Amino acid sequence: MGFKKIKTQIAVIGAGIAGCAIARELCRYKLETAVIEKEADVSWGTTKANSGHIHPGYAGPAGTLRLSTCRKGQLLFLKNSEELSIPVKWIGSLLHIFRTEELNELNHLLKQGKDNGVPGLEIITDRKRIKKLEPNISENVIASLYCREHYICSPYEAAIAIFENAKTNGATFIFDTKVTGIEYDRTQKTFLISAVDYFGSKKSIESEYIVNAAGVYADDIARLAGDHSFSIKAIKGQYYLLDPDVKNLVNHLNIRVADKTNARSKGMYVGRTYHGNAIFGSNYEVTDKNDLTTSKKSLDEIKEKLSDMVDRIPYDKVITTFAGLRAYADTGDFVLGPSPANRKFINAAGIQSPGLTCAFLIAELTAQALKDEGLKLRPDPAYIPERKKTESLNKDDFSNNNVLYKKDNFFGRIVCRCEKVTEAEIIEAIKNGATTVDGVKFRTRAGMGRCQGGYCMLRVVKILARELKIPEENVTKSGGDSYITKYRMD
Image (cartoon, rainbow, N blue to C red; front, side, top):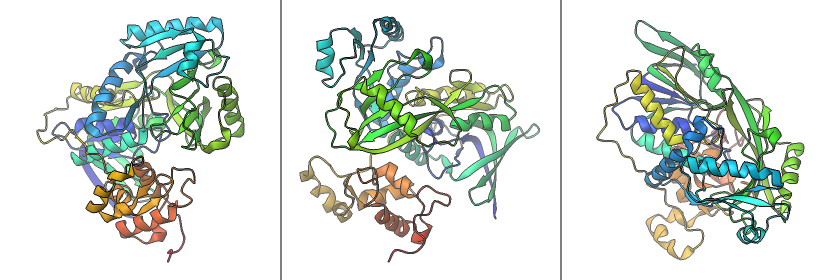
C-alpha cells in the first residue's frame, strides 16, 4: 500500500453537481483546487438519481434559502447551460389538486411564486382546458397551478459537463478516495486531510481551505472538522422509468400536490426525462445513507397515487425502477457558509431540492464565503467558460450522419443498439474521463435503453480495456471491486 501527499489551496469534498460547480467557479481565479470524491466518477451520489427538474421558484418553505434562491438559481443554471452545452429542455408544469380545500394551497403557491418573480403562473379551474393541456389527466383532478417556467435536464450529464470544464481549467479530481480524518494546524494555518482509496492506499491532502459538498455524508465530514451544528437525514425516493416508445403519456411535468402528512415533499409527479422517457415517482422515506434499494410496497404506493392523477399509465412498459437519496438537513434548509468550528471550513450541505437548480448560485455564494474568510480571488485571464459538446449521431435524422462517419469511421460502428451509441462516442467519453462501464453509460447512454445493457455491456468492456490499456477482467461497472468479467473475453 502506497502513500501520497497532495498540497492545494482549496479542497472540495464531494463531486456531485454542487461540488463540481464550486470547483468550476473557483477556476475563474488564480487558485489551486482539488476535488476529493469517494466514488470512481462524478455525480454518483444524489445527483445521479435526481429527477432533473430545473425548478421555477414557487415551492418551498417561506423564509428559506431553498425558496429565496430558486428563481435566481434557475436563471443562472440556464445561462451556464448554454456555456457548457448542458442539455436542457422547456417542459412547463401542472400542480394538480383533488379537493376544493386544497385550492388554498394553490393560491398560496401562486402568491409565493409571484413574490419571488416567477412569471407565467396561473391557476386553472376549467376542466376542459386542463384536459386540453393533458389529455390523459384523470377526472379526479379539479384544478391545477400552471407554471410556464419549468425545465428539465439530464442531471448527471450536467455534472459531467461542469467536471470537464473544471478539469480543462486546471482543477484536480481525486476519485475513489474516502476522507477519514481532518485536522487543523493552527501554526501553519492549514488543514491536513487524511484519506484512503478503495484498495487501502493512504493519502494526505494539505489545504488552506475546505469546502464540504459531501451530499448525504456532509454532516459526517463536518464532524471530522469538529462541526456538530447540523445533521443530515437520507431521504429516499423511488422511481419508475418507461420504455422510450411511450411517447404521448404526458406533455408537461404533472405534479400531485403534496400530502399534508408529508409536507416536506414537493409531491409525486409524472413527467418526462430530458431524453424523452416517461418517468414517475417519487415517495419520501427516511432511510440509511447507503440504501438505494427499491421495494414493492413503495412502488405500489407510487403507482396507486399517480394512477389517481394520470390515466392509462402503461406499467407493462417499465424498463427499470431505481431509487435516489436526498440530503435533508435538520435545519430544513441549505447549510451554506463558514462552519462555527472553523471559518475556513465552508459548508455547502443540505443540498436537497432545489439543489440542482441552484448549483451555480451555490458555487457563487461559496466563492464569496471563501473570499470573506481571506481567500484572494484574483481573476485568471486564461479561464475558459465554454465546454464544447461531444459529437454524437443524430438519432432522429440519419441523413446527416455521413459527415461524422467521414471524419471518424468509428461513427459507423453502433455499440448500443437501443440508444444508437457509436464506438466513436464511447472512445471520446473515455478520453474525457470515463474509466468504468457506468462512466461510459452516463456520458453516452450506452446501456440505458430497453435492454438495460444486455446487448452492449461486454462490448463497452472491450473498448474500455483497449483504450485504458488494462486487462478486460480489470474493467469495473462502477469502480472498486465491481468487476464485470473474471476472464478475458476472446
